[in-house]
Length: 169
Image (cartoon, rainbow, N blue to C red; front, side):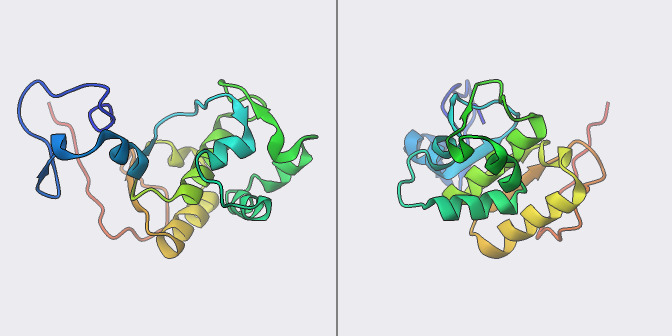
């Protein structure tokens, strides 16, 4: 992800997407269309601002529908400020699992072309994983790359492709 986001540059070799050289892509376009969920950190803002950053045509009803999908609607509704509740950079008042759910909700709202989920969706209960993954598969155009470090994918969702990589010494 650091290569894709131009945080680091390759020292040698070439990197291509769809047979096109990586350096030919606009970095901002890549950042807008390739998202990654790797951990449970967030930037400080309201829940609504976090979910809709740069996306101005979504209603509160649509936000709550997506929050219902990821099973955060009741919790967030219980906060005195609802979706206007401030979340600080360590995620408070949400826990680690809830931050992952929030990030998945944000991804569903924004629908990047590629969503790379790096070993975090497996932290969610299997029923919730299945619910979210089925929704992504059936109702979005997101290509999901779910990286997990276990032979048990955990999910009952049928992936179009499963690639198992092993490290050998």
